[in-house]
Image (cartoon, rainbow, N blue to C red):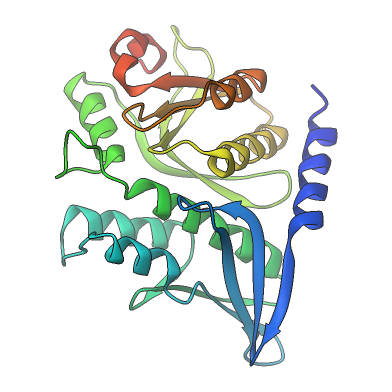
Length: 253
């Protein structure tokens, strides 16, 4: 695989598809990424002084979750995971709005982090039908803990493009598995999540001197398209359906 060609192709696709429009004091940026309703994600930005830019999603992601019946109570599992995700991506919460302030120089990276966090939060807070008390990422963590599989949580890696990517779990190399293994948990697999996962991983390994593998754990209680599974495999990403995770336990040890 020609990693540079694939990264350039993906970047060109984003540049061709992204649009913006001036609305009052803000610019409305429409990205090619889709939320779970198949609507394009939008970010609102404005310049607050000579050197700084303000970002917000205007409360879209969390507002939609609340409108769909999701509740975020203080110190609850949902609220804690939401706050951890926001913190990991260098963002802040202002009521229901996801926000950030950055320098003009760091605009591209912060925009990337904003989109990634919006996709992740929109995706991770869909609950498994069989377990309304836990989020899917917590179900995966529970499996690892129960089977005494040791991991690191929320590991951030700088890619070749200088963007920062956060992986849900990391497993160190050992005699049985001689390469580092990173893990992305996907509750609802769709085209936007698939494409972002592939690009992030290509950019990640292009910046690493050591080899590494990416494992995606997918909640197959939600619909899973075989084409998306095949796309992961084409890029040497290992997809695991959560219903079969027991048979894949050796990959994590």
